[in-house]
Amino acid sequence: MRARAGLGAASLLAVLALAACSPVDADAADRRMRDVFDDLVAQASGVDPNVLRTLETAEPRTQACSRPADTEQIVLTATGVLAVAADASAADGVRDDLGESLDPAVWRPLADADPAAERQGWISEDGVTVTLAAEGPALVIAVFSPCLPG
Image 1 (tube, rainbow, N blue to C red):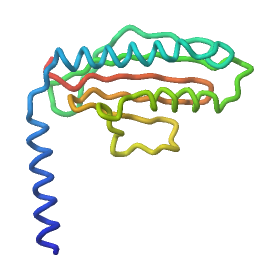
Image 2 (image 1 turned 45 degrees about the vertical axis):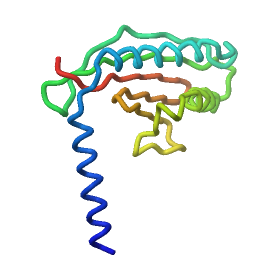
Image 3 (image 1 turned 30 degrees about the vertical axis):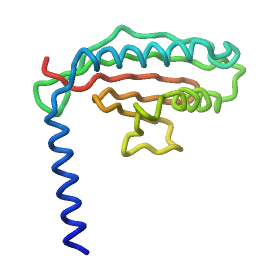
């Protein structure tokens, strides 16, 4: 039984290693990143202004990745603020609604995702990552491209 479990674990590690080496179609990943960001921002923009008062997008920024070395990723962010009269849990509801709108055939929850956490995340097969956070009266949408050579 242990040999079978060890073989299964070794097979899983081999598959993960091969997947990490597989080339990412940078153009397709860029389109997915921008499309999902635009969709999430459009959905958040449609939330009742008595709940989500503002929603501001930031300029795209590039940041260095720690692994693999000499790679970078693009980050798209939008931040919304709850209306003063809105209940603080409303940000959680907006975050949850946005997360539920992600197609489960494309987006899988990050391994360390905790449904009760303030921040939730998903990743696509091409390495685009979405995080949605409800932090107090703020809602933060962040979408990250995969790490690619700069």
